Length: 341
Image 1 (cartoon, rainbow, N blue to C red):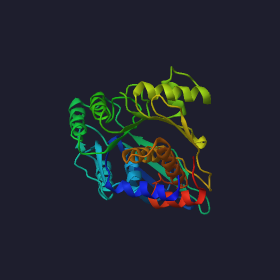
Image 2: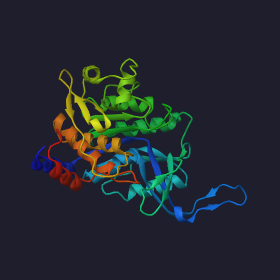
Image 3: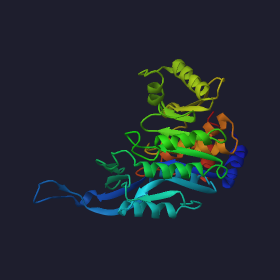
Image 4: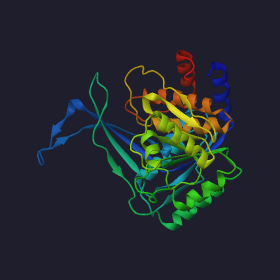
């Protein structure tokens, strides 16, 4: 993609109204000074000295954060948070983001706030080292009253948004935001606008939407095949696009991304060269954000995929945090490396 076309696409994002439906979590980073480690007298275990705590939206919030960085004008998060301290932090973090409208972000005492607590050991002249993560999740099914309220929010988006990004982050289907009822409402909206879906537990239960998967997820979806090679992988993606009558994408880490439209051959876009230390956390979410925004403004399949690879290249080089793809940096990367097609 030449620089002028990329700039036109990025500038057009400002007029978009997009929704992000899914599991918004709190990414809480505990920065630990490696030079001040102690041993507990009582337990004999290491004592870590936390010198800074920083919080930011994670999971679906990472998709949202990337859409903010790409310059999308108005964003509607659709999800829930608990009546707890983590929920307060998450709501506060979302409220500081420009263009974010929280009318569909619901507080409920029936759920706890999904939280990833990430201890980071900081040593001078070394990259941050992430220690064992501490997760807070909901393991029981989402109450019907919460699911129904979320479904109403999704249905109310009709005529008010240009596209929807779906981020299903839970390990056990039905315990988060994207319940069966919410999926049914998304299926209705997918008839008239792009709905890009990504799910940690797989997209097997999903209606025909624009699927964004990684290699293992596509293999699992395609008759449980353990490891499809390139020709078979392309055939599986083409079959998926034809079945859903929607675009379909599969990310291949350092090999780039494949995309297909119904009845058409697979398009391939390579990844960009690594330019130093990398941190892959959140790279997939930046791809989801870029695909959603690009498709919403009418970009071609190939253009959307090129934008996604530029976004991923930006975020993987942000070490020690869940990165944010920013429009100005995408222009700089594209200027440096040229087209990624």
